[in-house]
Image 1: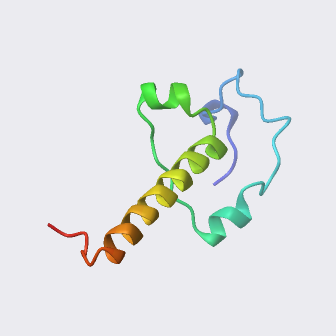
Image 2: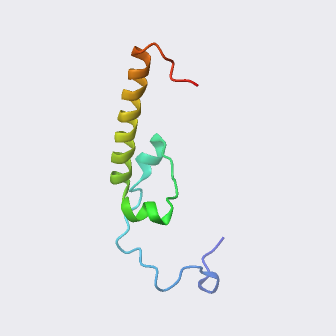
Length: 78
């Protein structure tokens, strides 16, 4: 398929002059999840770093709760 300026979908306001080819290649090769945040959540968590930090804290807290339940002899299941 040849490049035809008349059928080009690129708009004039698109500017990829600062783009870096393959910037996220390694991350995608390792495996990633893309999620869409609701607008109110996106207001608080502006980037991947802040989302990951919050989720790791939640994982840590949940892990401690699971360990606490296990040491009491409970499986944590209802």
